[in-house]
Image (cartoon, rainbow, N blue to C red; front, side):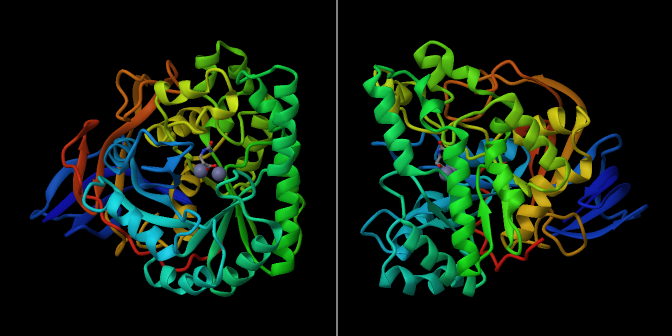
Amino acid sequence: MKILLKNGMVVSGNGSKKQDVLIQDGIIMEVSDSILASDAEQVDVTGKILFPGFIDAHTHFDLEVSNTITADNFATGTKAAILGGTTMIIDFATQNKGETLTEALQNWHKKADGVSSCDYGFHMAISDWNAQTEKDLSVMFEQGVSSFKLYMTYPAMRVDDGVLYECLKKISKMEGLVGVHCENGDIIDALIAEQKAAGNNTPCAHPISRPPAVEAEAIHRLLTIAKLAGAAVMVVHLSSKEGLEEVLRAEDQTVFAETCPQYLLLDDSVYCQETMEAAKYVCSPPLRKKIDQDALWDALKNDQIHTIATDHCSFSMEQKSVGREDFTKIPNGMPGVETRGSLLYTYGYRSGKLSLEQLCRLLSENPAKLYGLYPRKGVIRPGSDADIVVFDPEKETIISAKTHHYHMDYAPFEGWKLHGDVQDVYLRGELIVKNGTIQKENFGQYIKREKGSFL
Ligand code: URP
Ligand code: ZN
Ligand code: ZN
């Protein structure tokens, strides 16, 4: 089966050009100025932008956390993802204490296999570092898991500095990449206790108990430890100017940074609303201030932040309401996997902050490279999977919980206008989304990832 996309603006990380794209049997066969293929189905994409399928390297679907389970599972989450142009997600398979990595990976396959509408891979979040965990690392690589996550906070997941050092050393020797959640857990506990002692139990206390310095200190410590271990690291969901400054200060070591749309576009004023309205935005690290947003945008412009992911971790209003009387009981996280591309197109590219090529690198090419998917994914070139977003630069929509595809009763960006949206999406050559409507579900495959290459 051949498909010829005619006259689209093909975007890559280093240029954009009006070209034709020929797809056969799920693979891109040819990309050039003018292709004649009378045996192919011809699709006129004049005036449309063709991006390589977006890759969201930070999602949490079907995750048991805070005595509940995320509202979106792989079925609902990946459907929303592909409707937003994301053809591959990398979710955090998570090792609970007492579990082996192999068991954790099996658990994640049970959740995702057969029900996913976009392609998927897994990072492995390590919470229990022991001899068996260390032994299982090689199994992870064999099974296509070449990146890991460690947490410097959250009692159930947190590792101490010694474990951080050992893990980084071991994994970097195997050429894996570790992403780290950087917040100082002890200081957070102390600041929470202070807020509670002062009778402040509402979400207003959430950003006060996790100020930028808590992130910056953890980043500084992580980078010191990573340097000693000789390891490259990825600072995930970077939220603050202070944290960014630590990343930029790093010398003689390899540091990557990821941020998320919520840290670029929303600010901490949302926490000073009525409790349940504020609870929608309780995530960690918390939303920050305009000065932080500006610093993150500048760093994106200067290619000092390498990926934009979503940290999609959704909880319904009922789930969030468990923390009505105590903000520390509100499950942390918010949805985002569906709107990343169009939000970044509208508020990043259209507003003049980022070029189309930067957008392509941040949403697609860089995650593909860092996480061992390139050039199979992350680029529109012969030999790559035909994962293509046909993007309509003029389509105007408004984000709303009434129309989104999450299993969610609110939208953090409710009412936000989008100028530019996903029209069609091809996943390995199959038209999964047509005119914004899903055509085929559960076409997603597990993708074994190679070791990543550094940018
Ligand atoms: O609040 C958040 N970000 N929840 C998801 C888990 C994490 O820390 O990435
Ligand atoms: Zn995290
Ligand atoms: Zn996360």
